[in-house]
Length: 365
Ligand code: 13P
Ligand code: SF4
Image (tube, rainbow, N blue to C red; front, side, top):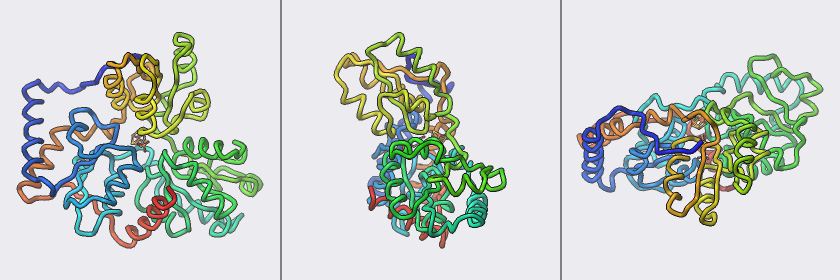
């Protein structure tokens, strides 16, 4: 499917221009007091106001290194939590819309994870035999769990390296909450798919037999991204038939079948870099969120490159989309008035334990 920059809101051009001006004015009044971080999935009208863009790893690094008093995170809830955990105590992390969550992160609760660990202890000694690794798309409580149990965090750009580390610590890993990223990364390390069973938190013993548990090299939490599950192998096959010279690139949250058919698999930043660095005139099919894909298509059009969206349906991250220019304008104007709106704060002891897990990841990557 060819893509155009998407504009889904019924705002008039004048109203859009006014919002743009309000954001610029408030940002300029705040000066160095504020920094805006923007994930690559943000809509264009928000993205262009960010001081830093990036994938989750880059934005985590930025959050750990910034000086501004206010970090306004144009992304989703877990990202603003990471910014709060990694920034200094006097810095304030803000999410312009508190409803901007991540449906994948919501697929694992700390209670379910604790229960899984207790159940695994019926068969194995988890604290000496299993390293827990959570994708950064998870709650602070789950990151803290990984910190407490000798594990760490990963992002889509370092998952393979982190899993390799995890297996160097203990013979098995427990990967939360995205089964697809866990499976793809384990596969890259040469682990047979049959030795990475899915752990279903709704079933006793995760739906596994004691033998399956003893045989496993990795457990994959039964979670997924509702956006990336829309991409299907037949979308790739159909496109390849029409573009025999074209290249396919996918995010590792897509299914194993989609990643196996792609020419390249990587984080949002990897996708952007790969297409930007490709020779003029090349053709691309991209399997990740539509706001990124449509912006990329615009950016490379002048070089004669074409970028198509992998699914015939418009699948966008509706929670990322909750951050809109109006929310951003109000957030900044409130700061100008001396009021903090929508602060994201992670309390102790969760914050310290999650920091341990995140710092382990930053050292390893
Ligand atoms: P990246 O770290 O690749 O930017 O991915 C974040 C995300 O939520 C993808 O769905
Ligand atoms: Fe979460 Fe998927 Fe949205 Fe990424 S694209 S923030 S994983 S729901």
